[in-house]
Length: 306
Ligand code: GUN
Image (cartoon, rainbow, N blue to C red):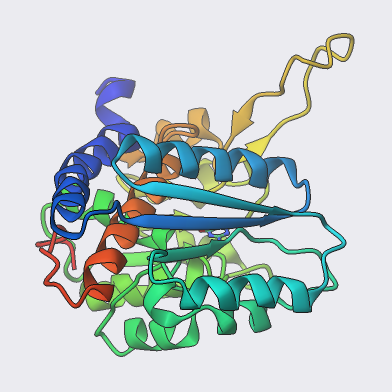
């Protein structure tokens, strides 16, 4: 098998999803005389967040979605941020609200997520949306795990009964991913930084989802031969050329791609794996929010996935 045959092409799947979303945003404009609208709030100068936000805004514009950006300085007060969100909650021309995480330490992420109207929560982080997901009746599903499930359902003929192991227990990836895989009839294990003998778990995984945030931590010793590996990490290594500060370091995942490729059946690359799918799912959630907020039926683009 060649490398290409083993690679799960996230960019290709993202384009496939966006091809289904674009006509729906065009139709929304024809029906309601405005485009679906996503507003992204970014607080501070986190360089990774700036790149993610720029990609979200550009992808929205390319897909018939109006995107607005609110940039706030890192010393903005929690109250001021809440006032911005309250205004967006009331604005009938705004369909989706996304507050890019992480937030500065003096702002409670929990409080901010709770303020966003669940019907505009395109991240799917509000407790109402989180709860509905775990009850098996989701409305807005967090974008990264939804993107991972989309690729898995296309790559695996029958996911039922597979052993799925997740490394990482965050609210953004690990926990919602576990819920989605459970609803897909997998047997699910969540491991994390305090798990003892983590390889004992991961070596039983038919599906391994890695979201640890440590560059290239996962090597072949974690992998069951023939496993499907989804790498959620995006890490920038230090540039090797210190005399050229503009030379950016290499982007790598949490998985050591070369080592794991030898033993896994399929693997997502970084970049070009989970990242583009996350953004495509955000576009899906935004257009869905736009239709639902107009009390209009939204065609299920995820038929066969959920
Ligand atoms: N930071 C990293 N991933 C995400 C995401 O999916 N949504 C938001 N709002 N912030 C993030």
